[in-house]
Length: 272
Image (cartoon, rainbow, N blue to C red):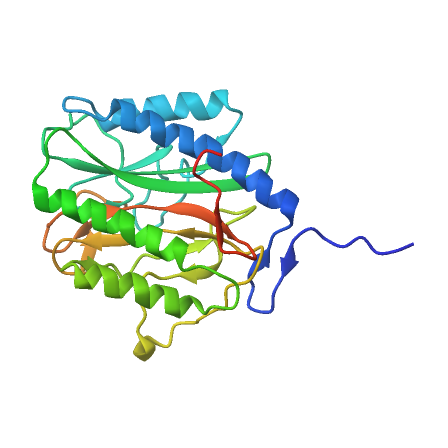
């Protein structure tokens, strides 16, 4: 009897290449995430609370048969598990903002990150939304961050080293007068939310970070995080979950889960 070949293929560097079936299962989870973020776009406005946005997301994820990946994640530094389905990060908050009862106000921006597991596979995506009328430079920050993600996706093809793509992200963002966050990066994704490899949005040879070659059937969550001021971030004052810009200037965050194909990138969180 022939030995059954496992669907996933583990590489020497710990990166797991996915089968065509697994990629479609990740797409199904990604479609739930896409729907949640579409709902957020429809509901984000002045006077709405991030707690109410999270309630909408939790209800829909449960109805879709999914599991909210962020809810219950442990953080020894914070001393309590993450309590919500969404990370809702407002203005100078970069990531891991906890939904609360503070109403959003005109001029705010809110980064919303959503992760869902469905039928054993994960999807992860994030967008930053404007609340009412925002400052033109903040609007430019959001557009540059989103375009940085698109440039990364357009630059993906088998055989390229990720460092090449990361340098393109960094050069574009810094050329626009903004800063790329170093401490938080993208990641591989599949059966687990966070798999190898780490996917930085910048490149610095002096740090000797591990590079990797893009290969067909690799699945990555790519997520540029861009600051208006310096790249420095720190934990906020209230807890050890939310991360804020050190200079308290605004920041933006966009993310897609995608698979590497023979011809480039296949987005798995765009709703198809």
